[in-house]
Length: 142
Length: 142
Length: 142
Length: 142
Image (cartoon, rainbow over all chains, first blue to last red; front, side, top):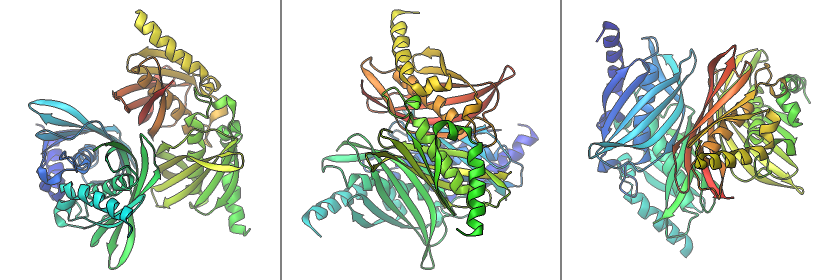
């Protein structure tokens, strides 16, 4: 790992640790590269919808944060990121052991970043697509 | 309250109580009428983003569930509702004492319901718009 | 009409006349007030989808421009407006004599405007909802 | 080309030719495979926005139709397709000689298809990303 990416990883981990929502979900960062961040969280019975699957808000939380940190990974060190808007299309129930969300920057910009995230459910060692998100992130002064 | 609306309220409350996500957020139903449901949850330090405001996923959770139950309030009793897609535009930080989300059915349908939700933050007795959501709900057999 | 609103109307009409898409659709501005602009266009057999109804792009064109000019109506005179993103939920076929789109500013801002638009079809003197749009507009230097 | 794909191509071309919007834009089908359709249209001064670039509705028209025909390419022959909702994120101005839109099926389904489309501008022989779309298509009886 180069010094540059160590700095980047430290910056993203620092912001991530301040997101108590991520701690409450038991989420962890499993991948960081410029323009892409991956998060993983176990599916918990405490955050279910009425059929016992993960609530769409859990899928949203991971997808939104993965997309946001993907944008942050391409911003200057003195910036933070906030979500302007994001849309989620749900593909299948959030069931299994865990959710894995990978964000990607579609288009960086001075004022706006267009991002997407893909969320999969991990069950018995295989991955199944659960949702896709597409949104707009805004760089703000830290 | 008429018998019809008592039946409706009971049906929505029963589904709501199965959503452990709503219990974990401390959410409650504060209004039910045909085509519109209102939810309220205190803002908790356990579900914050990196700046200490409520994570977008909390705003999303309440807006999505309020919109979904608004759709359910116009479905036959033997149906459940699932979200196909929903988009959230964030207007201001989720800060204050509580979030209040009101869902509305824009267009009911046999196969699809188009819905929206408005989410406000309650702070010092006044309300401030936090987000708007617009999405598609699908009726499924219970 | 006050001087201020005459200036505003002139500014919006000037931009509108440069939108050759609006001329090709036969669209006209039928209402301008601060934060809301209404457009109207006849439904033409030249812009249909495969079933003979208006193509979703016609509904989108009117909704997007109505929403954009609603935002422009709240910007300083030296600004133009561009669409960052917009979502359309289609409610019923675009059939009848004309489409009428009314835009509204949900939240103005220095960097982003959140907007919506409601599109109706006019048929035999009555109006039917055809689509709702929600999006983000960006002020840029003219 | 197998018989099956000749049948598929014929079915998509037949529907496409009924879309007078596509004819008015000068659009043509440049690629058909199961789950993906590509459309191309010259950028015309008749369909511009106020700065002279292609109006977002042109980009939308191509992206929406490419996504819709991608879904149709995976449906049984007695079905047609209608758009339930679609969101467009605009990445750069629609300028150059032509727009090229490629649709993809993200998730087929009995009641709903989740789709996306990527739109590029062709200028001086190179391609530049102009927009991404993500939406929901509904199969209906032809």
